[in-house]
Amino acid sequence: MISIPLSFFGGIGGASARGILIKGSSYLEMLAKTDRVVFDKTGTLTRGTFSVTAVRPAQPELSGQALLQLAAAAERFSDHPVSQSLRRAAGQLPETLVTTDARELAGHGVTAQVGGRAVAAGNAKLMAALGLTAPAVDEIGTVVHVAADGAYLGYIVISDEPKSGAREAIARLRADGVRVVMLTGDRKRTADAVAEELGIAEVHSELLPEDKVTQVERLLGEKGSGECLAFVGDGINDAPVLSRADIGIAMGAMGSDAAIEAADVVLMDDDPMKISLAMRISRKTMRLVWQNIVFALAVKAVCLVLGALGIANMWVAIFADVGVMVLCVLNAARALDTKRL
Ligand code: ADP
Ligand code: MG
Image (cartoon, rainbow, N blue to C red; front, top):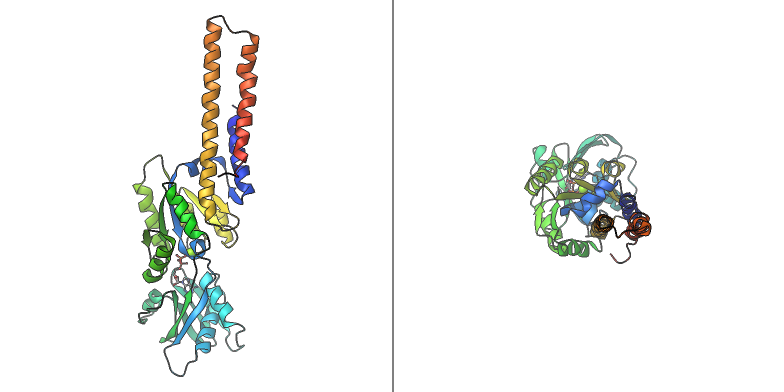
């Protein structure tokens, strides 16, 4: 049945014309069976380009600008969206802030030597790891606490906006009967606010990269055998989860190269709406495959009966073979058309 691979090629081709790269027909088949989609928050559901909304030095002699510059200098070598936002907000850094020994602690933040001082910038978990207590912050947003030489210096609040279309993308998945879950390493307050805005009921926050794997394994364990779980992420602190899920979906424009490599499906334009589109394309492709199988077998069965009864002639036999093939190939070509999905 030549039409079966052709349907898959059609589905993959149709998807790529819409900016969805599917790395093989088995993933197309699995997408059609996906009943739960797990999202990483930062960079996936949110833009990941934060703006600094508050700078709060904890010491009277320290200016907001100095605190921001110190954090940005410590973050100089990180490619986390938080760090890029801090660097953009801080602008040109003074030459005295030389950064060495920079270390990134996944799900925590960074530590580095900046101008001779041991600086740490990250969340409350990082401060706790250094033996410091970060104050409770009421403002909504991702909080970056800053410490130097064992003293707490203050915090910076940055806020990340949900992507335009993220809310509709979630609504569409849910309308198709898909269970939606959001995972994040960010603190509960910010995570809950984003989830509420996007209409996501199930959220797990303050997770380290390995906790995300545990959560996905739990969800994998809960599902039925014929169902698949998809994880959508940008690859920063979530690459292990991308490869652990049945289907890993990566953001191609903003995501890291590691994510694009580890993923089974890549969304070239980072648009979360493309997830439900990919699932619709895959369901349509599978429908065409089954239509062709059933149609071809039915025609052949009828011809067999006609032949046994002595009614069939050569033209009936030719139709049962070549005619059915041509019709199936034409039907398979419909997989290319994704306009009405
Ligand atoms: P998400 O799950 O939302 O994608 P991550 O797992 O990448 O978030 O990070 C979790 C948390 O760890 C962030 O919300 C932030 O508080 C902190 N963090 C991680 N990397 C950095 C960094 N480079 N600078 C400051 N904070 C960071
Ligand atoms: Mg992330």
